[in-house]
Amino acid sequence: MNFFQRIKAAILPTQGSDAGNKYNQSLFSYFNGIFFNIPNNPRAYVRNGYQGNPDVFAIINMIAKKAASVPFYVYEVENKKSFNRIKNNPVNLIKKGLTEVEGTDLNKLIARPNEMQSQQEYIESLVSFLEITGNAYSYKFMPEVGRNKGVPTKLYPLPSQFTQIIGSGTFDPISAYKLQIGNQEIEFKVNEVNHIKFFNPDYNVSGNQLYGMSPLMAAWETVSSSNEGTRAKAKAFINGGAAGLLFSGDKDAMLDGEQISKINQQIDTKLTGADNYKRIVATNGIVDYKQIGMSPADLEIIKSIGADRDTLCRVFGVDPILMATDSASYNNKEMAYKGLVTNTVIPILNMIRGMFNEVALYYSLRDGVEYYIDYDVQAFPEMQKDMEKIVAQMKESWWVTPNEKRTAMNYDRIDEADMDRILVPISLVYLDELGMADKAL
Image (tube, rainbow, N blue to C red; front, side, top):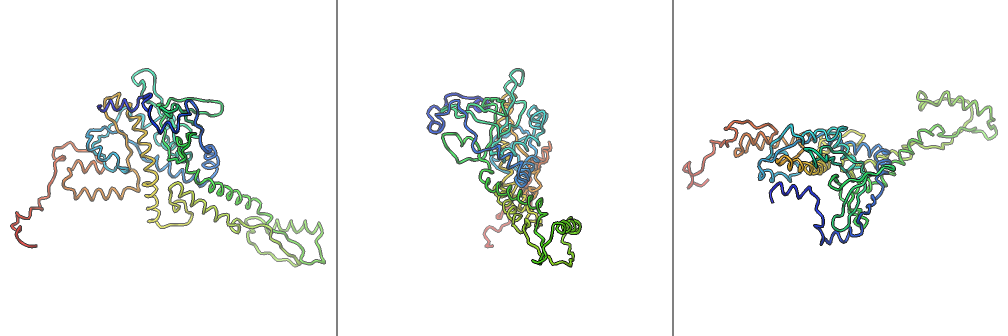
C-alpha cells in the first residue's frame, strides 16, 4: 500500500471492518443510533467555572493564550526517513526532512480556518473548550461540488457543552455528532468532525469514556468552595456597615429614641467613609460597644480563597507561583513558565497538530504532495535557552553540514554546493600518524 492509498484508508469511512471486535461488543453493542449522554454537566463548567470563577478563568485564559501564541506552518515531506526520526519528538526544535511551503490552499486554511476567526482565535477557542469541558470539536466544512469536493475548506470550533456523540453499535461506536442549542439540532457525519479530548477513566455502557474528562470535574468541590468564599467576602464588604452595636454603659441612664438618632447621625458624619477609616474620636458619655461582625480576614475567607486558587492551579497543570499575588523571584517564575509550556501547553498543541494533519491528508490526496503541519516551538520565549544549547551543540558537531545547522536554528537553506558539504577539523589526526602508537600515554 503506497502513501496515497494509506491516506484514502485513513480518511474514508469503512463499514463492518470490526465485526469481531470484542472491545466494541462489550461496550457499544446496545447503542445503535442512540445518543450517548454527555457526562457530568459541562454547561455548569462553563457557567459556574469559567464564567463564574475568576481564578478558573485566569488559569484557562493563561493556558489558551499561551498555546494560541505559537504559529502553525505547512511543510512538504521531502525525506521520509529523516522526518520519521523526529516526527514523534514532543518538542521538535529541528524540522528534519521537511521543507516549508507557502501559498497553498492548505496554508490559507491554517492561517484563517474560517471567515470569523484567525488561526490564533481558532486555537484559543479549541484549547479553552478542551480545558473547560475536557473535549474540543472542530467541524470540517467540505464542499459537495467543484475542485475542493470532499476537501475541508473551513474549520469551525463547536461548543463542546452542546455537542453530543451518537452511537452506532458494535461495528463503529461513533456514527455521528449532534449539536443542540435550545430547540435547534444539527447532526454532523462522523468524518465531518474532529474530536480531541482528555483521558476519561469512567468506562461504562453509557459511553462516558467517549467523552473527555474535564479538569473541573476533579476540582468541582474546590470551585464551589472558591465561589462561596468570593460571595462571602463580597457580602462581608457590602454588609460591613453594621460591624457592632453602641449602647449606654450606664444601666441607670438608658438612651431614648431621640438620643439614639443623634448618635447614629454623629457616627455617619464622623466614623463612616474612607476618610474616617480607623479614626479615633472622643466622647464625654458613658458608652459601651459590642462587635457583631467580623472582617473577611478574621473569618479566614481570603486565606481559604488563596488555598483554593493553588489547588485549581495544580489541577490545570499550572505552577501556583504564576497566580500568586505576592512577589516571587525571577528564576522561580522563569522555571514555572517553562514548566507551563513543556508540561501543559505543548501536549495540547500536539493534539491540535494531530487534528490539523488529519485535515492535511485530504490536501495531500488532492495535490499529490505529502503535507505535514507543525507548530514552531521556538516561538515560546521560554524555549530560547534550549535553542542556545542547540547552537552550542551545532558548533561542535563538525559532521553536520552548514545547511543542516541553519535548518536546526530555523534559518533558510543556502543554495550553494559548499553549504551541503561536511567540514572536517584539520587539527585532529590519528594517533599512529604521530608515531606515538607504541608509546604509553
